[in-house]
Image (cartoon, one colour):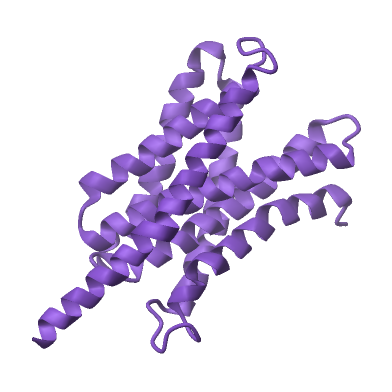
Length: 239
């Protein structure tokens, strides 16, 4: 039977992911444009695949947390960040997606799918481990969950843009670096033994600023840039 913790976790995971997916892609499909820049069926397919991958990634990270120690935190952060971004790269760099305009948008869908279930599971476990979670706890952890939506949505879109442009050497390292730095800043918020409050808030502020920057870059620069390049290429072919 569905309980309140599951409802809160589902809202935290799927709400921001679906909203941001719609907000990001709405300008590139009907009715905003006569001819959509992507296939809606593939958007849903990649989002669904991301939903599955989000749970797999969460399971691996939870497993890493159980075997890790203070001395291995950095190694785990680097290892999991590399594994997750490489997994996204393998999927988006499939031959049918290479140098295609719509791949950048499929990257957004894949990332939001990953973020939805990863955030759902993270929020649910966090609240479950609290002895008596309050409404304030639920709101706080839901806000933290938005950071994962911004992280995975942005980094996957960056990789998708690299595949579209045929420039993985420039875009994949950027996505990986964003993920690594975010994870280090985010985790520092919880390591109160090393960063006592309120100093630990600096890590959270830094993590938030990083993913907000990454998302606005995707939304305002990368996706519009992909469309501009596609239009220029189409005009050259006509000429």
